[in-house]
Image 1 (cartoon, rainbow, N blue to C red):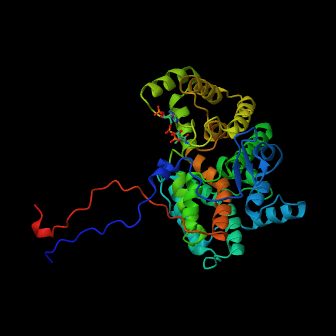
Image 2: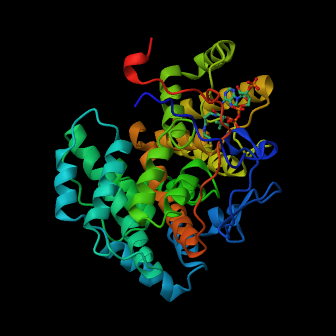
Image 3: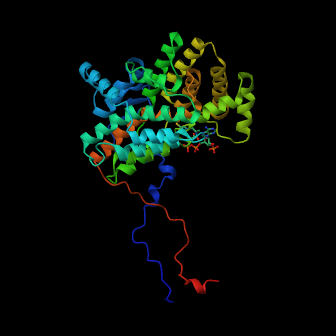
Length: 392
Ligand SMILES: CC(C)(COP(=O)(O)OP(=O)(O)OC[C@H]1O[C@@H](n2cnc3c(N)ncnc32)[C@H](O)[C@@H]1OP(=O)(O)O)[C@@H](O)C(=O)NCCC(=O)NCCS
């Protein structure tokens, strides 16, 4: 074959005027789940202001709202809570995987693999109906905390835990990842965790949710879409930012070093984690809510150092860059005060965002259109193929 093979001409040229790097500002689909409200409410889940949900509701109510479309009545809430408790167990093969993890693995990688394995073992694995997807979503909501806490204990060589099965989702999670917390800080810690789970639950077409929707749009299974979402959330520009903030605060070490640390970071053009947002350029209403809880916890725990460091960084970022903290910034302070291991910060985000992801997968598949955009080609112009033995 010594005849040159020419590239076929491109038949349809994408519209360059609609190109937006990083899809910034692009409306990429419809959703009834979350409204990013630039006004005072900041964010609404299915119409309810995030501030009202954070003030009055439990994470379980919010999970129900996102998955089932309405706030639960008392009997619905009781049934749902009971279902969550019943589903708190892992299939044997997943438990064996949990017991096989090694020190040094990142909990987000373990979680991604574990969720994929849960998909293989799910009793509804072959059923992609809405009802089956709801059952899978509820199971994942109960299983993910067990996967995270169980594997972390194996990695760190600590013994198994038998948490109290009667508490709320936040109390159960707190006990799993940070041990039993009694007295006043314990109650306030569970409240702060409950609020952080509510704030993390949903945020329209963020990168991980969009990854889940792209995956779901091929009509593949729910666990596959969630596996893609977990991989996407891990990055420090997205959900990995809460762990990165905690690491930054640990690196700074004391409030008197915060100012010089952040000024030097900015001078070196480093990104300061927990600041800025692709959509919420004027500030993130969720940040002020979790900030109040972080401040309260620092008083109750008698440890102001993390909060003081964070306040200094906050002030300098506002003065020097005009940037606002996002949800991850003060959440990291609250999680440090609660005693959540740093590497579990992003997995805890998953414990909550699983609700938004699953709701989006179901919404996508109910009104599906394959998500398949175009690329602006920047490669070489058409050229002639030279057979291997003729190439110089
Ligand atoms: C979230 C984020 C990726 C949004 O990025 P984006 O919309 O692409 O914004 P850009 O990267 O274009 O940033 C715009 C400007 O602000 C600066 N900037 C944005 N976030 C910054 C940060 N956290 N620290 C320092 N500078 C920052 C950029 O350097 C850029 O400045 P320039 O125009 O002088 O180059 C970005 O703000 C960031 O990296 N934040 C830190 C990670 C984080 O907290 N992620 C969680 C998001 S919820």
